[in-house]
View 1 (cartoon, protein in one colour):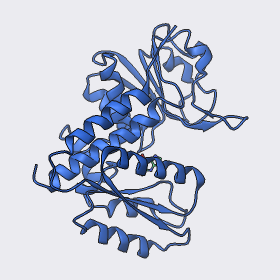
View 2: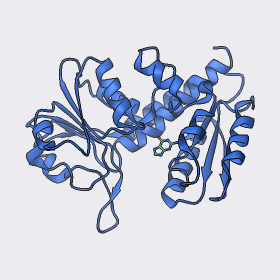
View 3: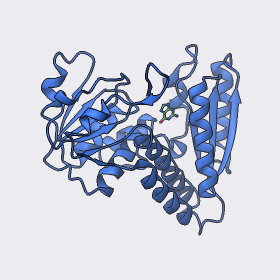
Length: 280
Ligand code: GUN
């Protein structure tokens, strides 16, 4: 039976560390959160991030914009926040409405306030091993592996999904820890052929029931990044938890696994940004 990796408990530790780390600062770290439109899931994520800020003693400034906001209006706001001395981090909640160019919007955020680590400058620094910020979800997964003393070096890490937010940076961070990394995606012909070789399996696809027990090697570490709703509307991941739990050595639950860690790592990035802005 697998040990459950408790993301909620670990996230609480990370946030306590962040709160303590801000004690010596002259000014409280401040996060600007931009939400365009009223996607209900995004609204839940945004209020979670604002709650985390409050818990850490950080400030958050919410900018709720209508769904028909123009690109010009959004870029003007970002420009203003780039120059605002009370704002250490700027987060644009994704996805954006279809008429807005995500790449253009994310590239407009000043790299030193890019607490999501989506700007090409920060992605480039991460890939070349000179990181300033780390992308929150992959960084949260690495923190889980570290906290549970799960070694990465020399092990076969299989990542399902190749998004800019999770799959690609996840593979990069596992590689930086000397894992042997395979990335699978929608064009991979036989997923199970790869997943069965995984010592560490990270699924970030967004399809309920994708990872079944026959796809998992005995004793593997299984990390489920997905946040899906099943037929009954219940939150679940990609992994068939009940069956895979019997085979894996470690497994993350959904909810209570990667999700809280993502938010905790955002707080860590915000503290990093605030220290940098205050010359510490
Ligand atoms: N949408 C889904 N994940 C994320 C994230 O990590 N950051 C932002 N800004 N939007 C998201």
